[in-house]
Image (cartoon, rainbow, N blue to C red; front, top):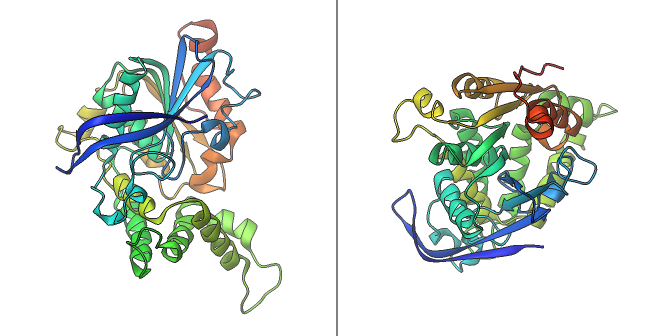
Length: 341
């Protein structure tokens, strides 16, 4: 069941703009009386229900026994799943610009409201990983352990270009900017996004035409289907603002060198990458693991590309189990090594 946190004061944003208060949708799953709390940060188009979109990690049969943990997940500012965002406005494009840092500060206010000053584990994939990393820099004592999945410290020019290409598709829809407009642009934007979420190999293996044909290609129908399905569940203006927030990711902005900023992370950290991820390539996770103290790197071997964090649950569970086992089960120290199988 979704819960709602209402903040009634002015909330100043990194852009210099502000919100006259906001609403955050959140869920608390598992055992609400458990001493150990896991805080989950969701990806760009995710919501506050990790038991649904990350059931491979959070379910009765998964790695985390929900009777032992309280699991908190909050929808980000700017989204369309209950939190304050552009979809709330009659003129959506008058919504202020958001950054990852703004999202984190809003969730910190929620944590304060919930009387959560520290958690056992902070975890997030993709844009959620950007938030989890930023949170660990803003408040190094918040998370005892940190898991960053398919994410980065600075959003790359390549990834920013992908996001801008999607925003161009949104703006090309003449109805974009109207409260109920932008659907066709969103369909096209999501089709573009699928090229970055999956890999060449994945498309070759699954979307290759069985018969040689000059038209009616499987790959064409696949991205069209993905665009249509996404347009049925997400808001074009939320997508626009959230993609711009993702582009803002640079944990060193205004703070000094990137290496020095990452060295401030106190949490014991597992960084997980996907070997076929084009959007957040493995060298970005290697950089995080090399510059965050007491961090290790795990690698998911998969043809799925970036989306492997939503699919390769067996590998994901194995990597996390290896990282957490002694701390969570035996409370003994251990040395963590890179997972390669």
